[in-house]
Length: 332
Image (cartoon, rainbow, N blue to C red; front, side):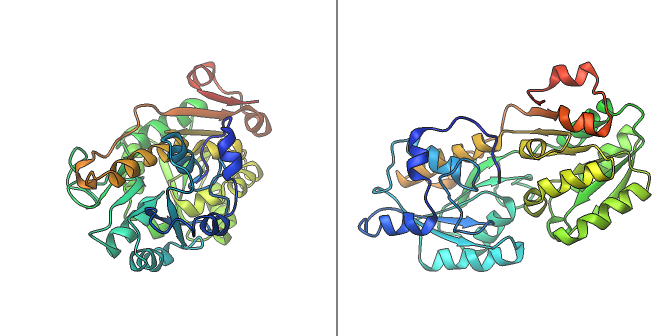
């Protein structure tokens, strides 16, 4: 996932090497704790860079005082296919590793399906209790813990912000990946739409090649704007979604600030980089002997609104001052 861009510490630059190089540097540290990275994006990506899947996690480890010589890393990737997460998780378990780190709920499910003994530290997009990943937020009780950015009111808040930005909004398109339909976002969005009195044009998109047709269907249904629901495949297509939004004249409300940086109109989200950085705290506690089931699953206390004025101008939209005053990040 792409965290919000920010100035990066010097050590991150020094660590900005591909994963094979990191592994090679650690071969002399046979007794170092072994951290398994269960990745959705390819393992060859530079994990220490700020915009990589585990970049801010690596920075978090550094901020806690760890060096490459104190930890060993193993990575297994799903190569951008949710269906391959289970096999990747099993590979890490068979090595074995001391702790598994993931950045998404699909990966967390795959990891927990592969082991009930190895600690799992993850970012969770949905409700971890309802999903069966934990007994409660305060006392997860099993082998999994981490951070969840889910709140039932988020769907309504995003829809409300979109309605405020586009006065008279009556029909909203929705991009959703059916592969992760077990997550609560479609249900929450439908409930919010009924409450707010807007119609939805829900489009199921399971692979990037289906995006063009989905935008055409939304436009044919009379959509005046669109929501993008949380999903890794859709996150990977943020630039393409932004381009299609301009082409079809559909203002987008998304769930991550990188969408706005890539050209979508708006996003309302927790800071993904901050959550990723926080995973290092959990790994540190687990390596020092704390059981994952005793570490409460945290929730963000702040959500940021990002807007792209260049995109607003391209769409011929004059955003109301009320929206601009609420924005935490404005791209001009």
